[in-house]
Every structure is written in structure tokens, then in C-alpha cells.
Length: 177
Image (cartoon, rainbow, N blue to C red; front, side, top):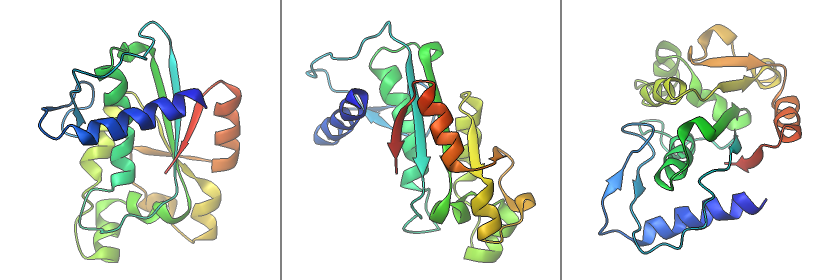
């Protein structure tokens, strides 16, 4: 819980420093972070960080990259910008509920929203950074979503609930968007 507040304090402090340069120290092009040279250093650079990102919120505009999915990249970039070795940053993301329509493959997304899925390159960048992406199998069946229509970067798990409890039991900090 302590790390949850540290991450959000850092995110909010970054938004106050508009004149500073945006950087992408780990995941290129996504999840920009602002350099804050006057920030107090609270990050333990030698520690291993474990973060589980739970995404249930639908995007405000299907034409734009989801701010909720971009938070995955931002959290990773914030830790690396703070001096954490990427090898010591363990992250995983699980998607369910109202966020599932935003992880559809391009063909299905275009049929549903009338535009290409702007999130697909972001998913590729996240996956290339070694962050597993999961979708809740229960949500797929309850919402009648064909698993074949999900972006290929995602793996289907039995449920978001069991995935969350499994990773929390492994010491992951739980962040919900």
C-alpha cells in the first residue's frame, strides 16, 4: 500500500512540472514522464518492485489511446526514471469489465467503433518490455466476446479475481484503473 501512494504522489508531482522535458526511459513513445530535478528521492533503487495493474475502466474516446492502458507504460517509465533497474521491475496487467472492448483486435474494433484500434501499438510496446497482459475469461463469456477477437498480446486467464489474488499473494502491489 505504501508503494501505491508513492507512485501516485510521483505521478501528480510530474504533472505540476510542465516546463520540464518528457522522457520515455523504458517503454518508448508511451507513458511519458516528466523529469523533476527537485523531487525528493524516496525510491529504493536496489529493491525489487512488483506491480499488478487492474484495468476495468472504459476509454473516454475510442479514437484515442486509452489513458488507462497508457498508465501501464507510465508506471514502468516512472520507476525506471526514478532509478529502478528494469530487471528489478516486475509488472503484470489484467483487463476485465468495461475495458475489454478496448483490447479487441483491429478488425473487430473497427467494426465496433468505426476506427482502427489506437491501443494496438501500445500493447506491443508493453509486451516487448516483458510485461504480461491478461484478459479475464469470465468477462469474455459474460459479455459474449469471442476470444479470437482479442488483441494477440493478451493471454486469457480463468478470471481477473484469481489472477489478482495470485499476484497479491506473490507480493505485488495492486493498482486499479
